[in-house]
Length: 271
Image (cartoon, rainbow, N blue to C red; front, side, top):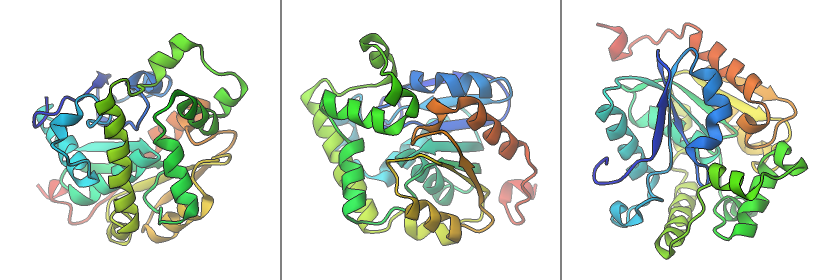
């Protein structure tokens, strides 16, 4: 329990910490292909969205800022001082925002097809409607649109239960809609987008060549405005690049993290 909010997570491996901010409706298990590769070199923690299990514990606040505060309390409870923070889609944007809000805890941020550069438009509205689907058919359509692998062959019903945490209670369905409403407010108020030009920690953007969820213009916006950003184009991968190309994704992450990233003025480097 973190600030009375239950957090579902996995924790494996040893070394520097990678904190993966998973996104709805992905379970921690959906990351197993990537984490099994990264945990050979790093401690890898995958945290599910804290607002879905017991929505009432959020006390009506589903904002990104509240979620980020929960993640900060979470790593502090685990005794982690600094982490490499990673996410896909919404989680990629949150990874960047985490570093902006809590520079004392960030080593690097890795955004896989992240939403940090998204502004409000008909395209972004359609994108949010898809990723925050609560009906089974809508969630299946989202998975197909997000993964080349699952466009070819969908997982079995049992595998779907292992990969995805579908909202089963009325309160959980309402929580998904609440989160969508709050995230829409973030987008329309350029909450995360406004941070981009002030980022002074290492960031890598991984862009899937065949991402049909996130329009390219939003990735380009981030790419052009984050100072010193590393940009990698991943071929033969959809929005969920880590499902389609886990080995290549792990290779890019490992290489980026193990690179020396000097950060003049960072308080933890001046001891």
